[in-house]
Image 1 (cartoon, rainbow, N blue to C red):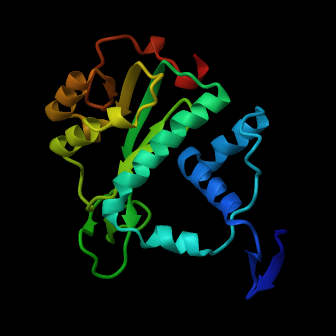
Image 2 (image 1 turned 135 degrees about the horizontal axis):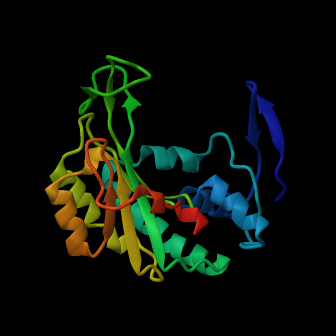
Length: 222
């Protein structure tokens, strides 16, 4: 069936289009990210996936939006399986990757469970959530994350996050370097990283590294 575009209420919407095309494009962009999708297509990989625009609103979008927090881990497992398959198709075989861990602020309005007043530079004094996000530096893919209450993340919570990394890693990865700011420095986090066999770099302004900073490098320029 052909796709047609109609204008309704000032929004561009897709008309009749095959569900399989939208589903494949949606899942791929969820786990790979739009930037990585474009770069992969330019390199000649994944030619069987057409670069189609996703519809503004569809039943599938509403379905994903309606999923509860308990389904998040299932989506992460789907993303990890797709990531490994896409890396194989694109010829990506990273033996070592860097995983960047950081928190952000999601401002909320009204009385929502878990909302706290904390570090919120754009909306000072307002409540928000403080999700933690992890990204693969080499490909800039979203690795995993967690929506959490609006408080500074604690050492035990960081350790629990690190301990589940292995089941989402592609099979070709043999070495992982974790990188985070001072919020993630704790003995629990360091102990978890050592037990899982990960290397780590946790930076803090009040810490003096035991090695010269002149030898530092950027991961994508190795």
